[in-house]
Image (tube, rainbow, N blue to C red; front, side):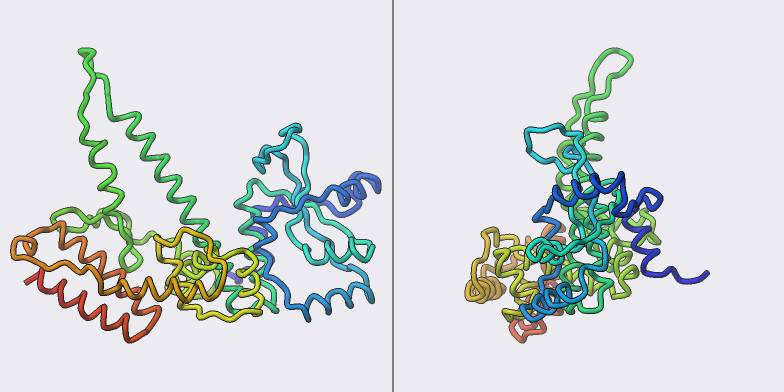
Length: 365
């Protein structure tokens, strides 16, 4: 079977309704001009567009002035209800959202240069985000950091949706099954399902590409389908990179999203330099919840995170060595340190890993 072209992949992935794509002749000249005057720009979509360097923006301006805007700007035809916009107008009113050509749109309006539009149809915001990320990754002028950020955004978005669906499914299951009514009219008030739900979710960890619940006795449940690919594996194959690359991209994207939007754009545009490993480490730190407003703050936070690696390590008693729950907790901690040491490759991280590994072996003796 012939390998699909990038255009075919993008069309398939975005679920664009090809037969409804219209050109700038849609509904006549007046309708087209009306759409152009009412194009909506959403920050969350515009932020998916890798920022241009000043020299690149100047070159684009010069090109538009000399040759005009040849390629149509892409807009998404949708409604206020799909966008969940808090506006005092009809939820079903048609809205046209810009999804490609933000820099050209800005310059064309500023320089009064005519432009064409192409109206695309997507089912949801997720489909639009996926399309925009894939479309940007297909461009030749994208940097490695920008590509990493976009792949990471795609992974994090997929995982968030999967997690949300899991929580909804679990809540529905509890609601339907926690109190079944028996023939004698008595309700079963067993709380086992409610008590076990949280611990079941906590015990689900991903090891070597397989998701298996780890039970208190340390045994893995291998009843799940081992052939099922993880999200990282699927996206790795889609973008032609390794599974580990996708996971590191996800950490990088989470770290960048903790930066002030202006600084994030400058980092992605190459205007400000920061070690990628630091951003990845910050991306994995759940305690970092405040927006980071400077690169000096990035360095300070990174130092604090790494300095805590060897702190608060409890002394292991003989009783605790027999505790299966402790074994599980130390195994999870060890796994986290292995990933951290692999990503940073710093001597400090590796030393911390050695200590954690030796203490884990003590428990297993």
